[in-house]
Length: 239
Image (tube, rainbow, N blue to C red; front, side):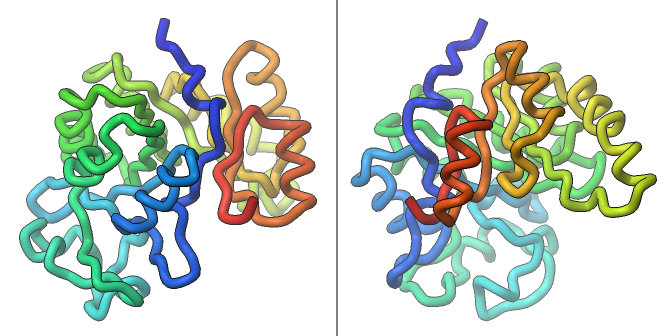
C-alpha cells in the first residue's frame, strides 16, 4: 500500500506560492513554496506533440501574449512563451520536477477535457518514472486516474471533485451517483475536494473509510475553519 502521509504533512501552495510579483506555475512560485517549507500544487496541459507543460489554462490568452489552445502548439514553441508579469517562460514538467528535487511534496493536476487522456498521462508518467521525491497526480477526469491505475499504479493518484455545477434539483439528485461512478472508475487514493462544498456528506463518507481529503482553494478565514473540520490538508492561496 502506498504511503500517503506526504499528502497531509504540509499545506500545498496553489500553483506554487505566487503573488506580489511572482506569477502562478512559475519557477519563482515553486521556489517560494519550497522556501516556506510548503508542498507544491501545480497543473499540466499537453502540447501538440505530447509533452506535459506546466500551465493551468486550456487557452494561452490569460497568462501569455499569445492566444488559442495550448494543445495546438508544440512544446518547443510553448516553452519560449513568456508568462505575463514575469521574465519567465512556460516550463516543461521534467524541468519543474528537477527544480523541486524531492525537497517538498508535489501534487500535479492533469487538465484533460475528454476521454483522450493517453498522451498527457504518458508524458506525466514518463516524467515521474525516475523522480525520487514525493509526488501525486490528480484530475477532475476519472479517465486519468483509470489510466494511471492500469499503467503506472505506483504513482499516487487522486480525484478532483466539485459540486458547484449541481444547481437544479435533478442535478443535486444525480450528483452523488455521478461522483460515485467517477470514484469507481478512477479508483483514487485521495480526494481533492472543492472547499465551497465542505462539509460534504459524500466526502465525509470516504474520509471515514480512510481516504485522505485535501481541499482547494482555501483563501479566507471561514474556509480555513471549514477545512480544519472537514479535510486533512489544504491547497491554499492565503494562509
